[in-house]
Length: 260
Image (cartoon, rainbow, N blue to C red; front, side, top):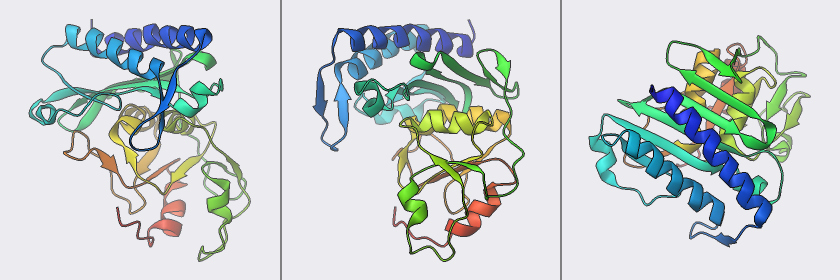
């Protein structure tokens, strides 16, 4: 079984577990970083770790819900996992959450799945072989103007008076799962996603490969591309956009100092 088949089957299986636990009633608490977590997050993480490392015992492991083991940096390949990306949506019975799994080799994702169980959407990619939604090929949009584009982000941020120039009229929406946002850019339902706050490797690794194989561009707000399995697994910000849109957004935000 190749890596993509392995992680796709695992994501679908634990998605069913998450839905069952949600229907039975969740236990919810707050982590030390003041973000919510549920018993399903922990159970899905445990199931994935057992399932995937049983199949690939020589791979490393990096997950939002597992204490970080620095020995992962000694592994050429590792799984980068967010067991439930978009926990706030999940615990409030909204569909904007996903299981996100990437296989990273030498700092770059080579196989990826983002599975949104409630939406019955499974995004997959393998390096050099394109990106797919439920088995069908996907492609980023060809939109070349900000005006009237579809943007995923915080509407209040775009409306803030401190911008050097006002943003044009755009269709601005948000989704709780960062990975799912990037996949919506990858399949052309939205033209771009912007976040000017730090994101973790597990938020991005799988969706990074999916957007790349679909032809979208992903950088931080300074135009720097991402690598994974770093000692501190954080990215300062993100711009994910159709190729013609990315430089238009970068021009508006690259002057910002986030001090990350």
